[in-house]
Length: 304
Ligand code: NDP
Image (cartoon, rainbow, N blue to C red):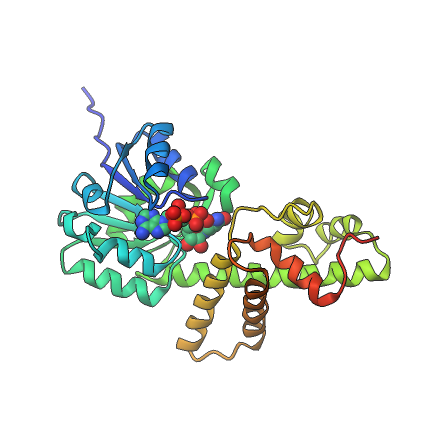
């Protein structure tokens, strides 16, 4: 008689735009799940919505979990959740695994992994790409950094959230890769938007320009999935914060500096996104950078 293998107990910390749909996928895959967010009301609500247990602190969550996923804004917050007061590291048993799915800093992640290793706790960095829509369908692209055995142990769990899993190297390497992905994405947005601004002033229709770009070599993720949906519609609500994009670009430049790579284009890209954040203020969606580009161009893309 075959006996079903018992799934490990999982904790999920950080129930924001991405964390909620990702935790839901984990619950639906049958893992016994405990969740936690900085906002206690949100923790209770999400736990009830996805049939998970709610924890009141990271230390409490760690007592019941063999694997813990963090999906938090920054590596500094991951560190605080692990090693701060009532931290996760206080209660996780030796042999447990932390999967940091935050878009984090490679050097900070390596330092966190070394500190956890002293308590025989393993860490993998597993940042994601694909945004809220692909988090909802469980079709995220997931980059994996860590030792091979740990990655194989977490593969079934991670597969509940993503369909494209790529092992990129040791701990921290996936966080480096993720920042580089967002650097390319951020640059593609800016140049595409500048093309729309120039074309609008020339008299071209923005909708037509997006269609032509998408049928031609100028196509990129922003022309396909952002310009019509969030810029021309003036909705500016893709679900990924401007603050988070600036953070990711800062990480990419940190890696450039550590590797002594001269990157004038990337530096300019970072400067433009940072200036947009300063000008537009906190709490904006990243697609609102288009409004900053319109401001410095002196016109809007859809002003016919
Ligand atoms: P959000 O800001 O929407 O969510 C982060 C969540 O973490 C919030 O609910 C926040 O609560 C909570 N939080 C903050 N501090 C703590 C803490 N100390 N303990 C417990 N919970 C805490 O971010 P996203 O979900 O958008 O992004 C999460 C990570 O994923 C980021 O690193 C981001 O760069 C990355 N990412 C985001 C994508 C997107 O499309 N949104 C796509 C791919 C990666 P509160 O709001 O109360 O502070």
